[in-house]
Image 1: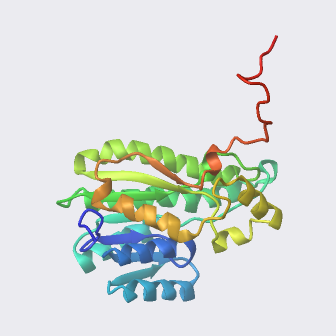
Image 2 (image 1 turned 60 degrees about the vertical axis):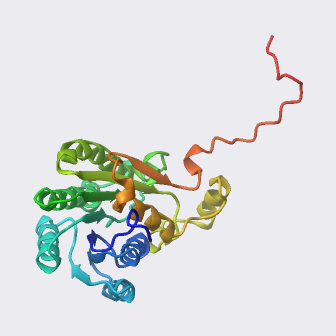
Image 3 (image 1 turned 45 degrees about the vertical axis):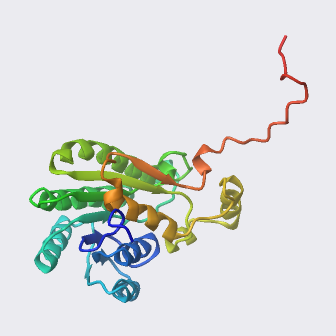
Length: 271
């Protein structure tokens, strides 16, 4: 592995690593050479599996229980990483929950509860990471997992999409503010991905529609997002900041509605 893409000697945090995309990111970062810390809220068994995957690549792990909506927990996680390994080089904000409900039926506490984890937790993570990275020699990498759903509107996703759109704006502003410290801030927006989080939100019809609309005609797997995160965490992305990378198989650019092929040479002419 070229040093350009290697993460050997780096220390990373991945929030929400007990399953799905978070687990895939944690393992991928370890595979490329990083020690990996992270957290989970309820799934201790899943977190133990992730720990095993990290350590199977010969890397150290530090996994804590807590909610990213709790800023004290997030700050403590950053402090423990530095105490254990000496530096904090990569921070991936991933922990989130899905919430699908018509806007007119959403209760105020439901709205705030969704934003607490899906938006405020990202702010806490960015702040904890940036404060530490700004004190260190060498570059820092902050990577936010957003969503393709913030680009293409989906009914019932008003709170979820508001959070993801907010993260995209936060990413761009922090990219400018933190550039002076050699900290890059980018985001990765997965499209439809086979994760436990999506099992409760997808009907068979929704899955079939996604497969039809995605240009590559299949649902993504978490490892495909994780590999893009590894690129952004590496030296190869050193001149990229404030960008959102879509990993959606072409879903967001699909404007096909079934036009008939032009039948007259030179194209149709309107009189």
